[in-house]
Amino acid sequence: MIWKATSERIEIRSFGFWQGSSGYDQTRAKLSPAQLTALEGLRVIPHPTGESVDATSYRVRVTDQDGSVVEYRAALDNKVDSDEGPGALPAIDIETLAPFLNTFQCMSATETRGDAVPTIHDDSGCLHGIFVPDACKDITLKWQSASAGDHRLELARCFDTTRIRVLSEDGTIELGAGATAVAPTCASLDVHLQQPGTYRVVLEKRNGAGCNAGGGAGDMMLRVR
Image (cartoon, rainbow, N blue to C red; front, side, top):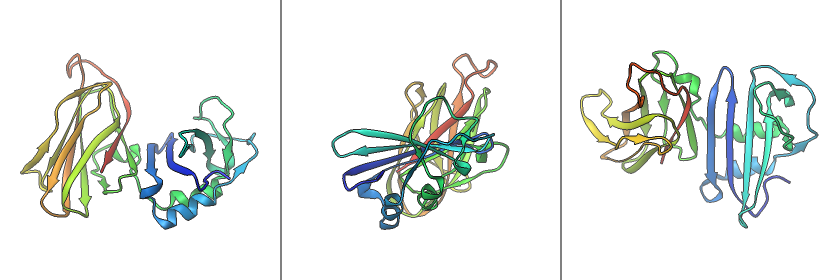
């Protein structure tokens, strides 16, 4: 059994050539009854030998109440994906992982490519993937918050220099601006919302050598609590 009565935390990181990065990280106490039921259905299969190309693969970490951690992997069609790194982690049957994956909607990094403005929600377990190029870039997101009060936005993965800002939906009023952070320290912002609603989140990425010089490129991860 993968998820046991003593399991305290589930962490999932996914990556696909077309989807980019995404993730989910939550403690037992904050999982819903439906999520707990889905996790109880996780099953291990023999390590697959077939290979898929540019599909989506998953790394899963389960932490026990004694602090021990067991890692697993999974991929589409129960194959080994070409983007997975080396190793022989126990394989989870993707058909038994799918019910849990269907309990949340976290943004994948590909949604921040181009000019579209994707929407994120309050789910504190979500690690939203955010792609940034090597150039300086402002990434704009819509944040639909279902609750007023104090919230924390933080980058769980970052590079170069970052800052987070929250504005009104139309962008005319700045509600909060975090301090600039230089990797390996990642940007964060504590903001108080007067009411539920839709807000604008701007993630600023700048390069240490200036915007005329290239910097890091790849997927960052944003969490909203």
